[in-house]
Image (tube, rainbow, N blue to C red):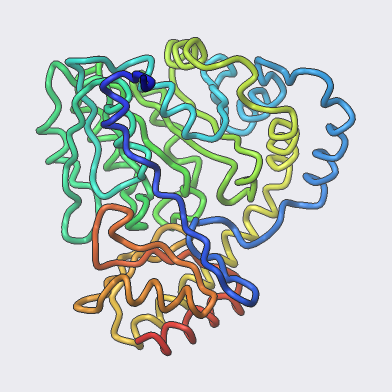
Length: 357
């Protein structure tokens, strides 16, 4: 006799995590959009201080972290939800809002977790193709919204294409949608965008009660290994996602690290500046090699391979110790997603690419 699972389990895709390849030397990891810099020294000190309290449960309300986020953004603390990475909040939103007969609309290709949402809830997913520039086609997405739509997701900047839309476009799009539809704007890479100041979209929250901004400490803050993210929206949204999640979902180390990381906005600015410098360096070098990329507003490039074999390029780079992401794993074959590292890592990628090509 075998175990029996519900029918939906077959429809939930496996998340396409980056592969690690056998290589005799040091790997250059440019596959997961991580920052190449370790956490700020005082963040590490804050984590170390918490190690002595691990016999106690973490604060289930995430009180201090939510208060710091509220102070930083001006959004009342009752409208701040904190999760084990922004992914947990997305999954909780699906659990709270989707069900058989309901619909979720998002662009594609986009963040790989989105197909999980409808599949796990038994809802219908409507994937709207990006335009030729790799950007969200908001008009096409709006046309797909019906009375059954509960959730619309806009990944801005978009992962994996690195493109972004200005806040005015998000504002107009949200204004045209029915108020019963939650519009989740996934801003995991917002600090890297040159189209806006990260605070620009905060003003939209008071104009649109159905708007949710989703952010993370994994990217520019460099806390991928501890998992902390947050959502800014209505109090009803926060209460709903908190209700369906397990208690103590954000551990004490993650809470302490995120609180301290927020105190070092000068470090955030330094990382954004250095990332912008490496973006210009990498994309200029790719253009010299005849490789086109989208207009990146993130910490990675989305690179068209043309008629080159994607597997040959990805595997060839891996054999030389450089790990990138294959486009077909992210929804569009014939592309590479390459995170920006520090200069010597980026130059090693370019040298390996020359050998492969």
